[in-house]
Length: 168
Image (cartoon, rainbow, N blue to C red; front, side, top):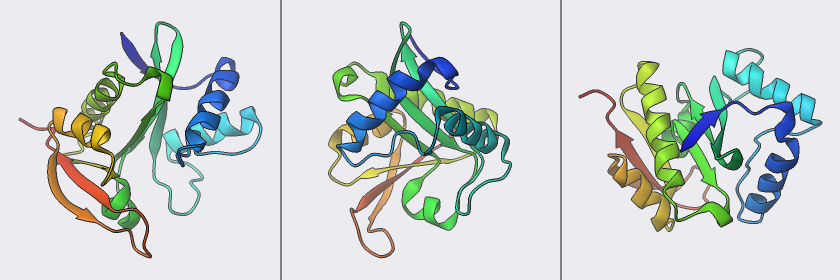
């Protein structure tokens, strides 16, 4: 069973390893730099919505864990900036390559949408690269309805933008 939980001091080795793996794919896994204490402090500040760096919003950074092993992560953003509304969305998730194809991404997104529902967010915006068919399938399995495909301001990879209703 997959659970989402905040990272702890015991997670440094595993999460830095996942960060290295996903950096090779161009994905910023940790979203923070510095010593592990600094990374955890930034995650705590963002969860509380305090001392946020410019362009950041209150967000929950959670480790996706299966049977005691971190398999990925999610960043659940409580609101949208203009950039997040354009191409970032409420939810940013990743699963390490060796743990893919087991339904973990679908469960991460399902639990994230439920968490946002509890915060009163409706609907939820989730985006993915236009050529990431695996992620598009995950989003559609979780009820995502494609609004459009947009190129980020200033260029870059086109993003599919999906909305997921959280109210019945």
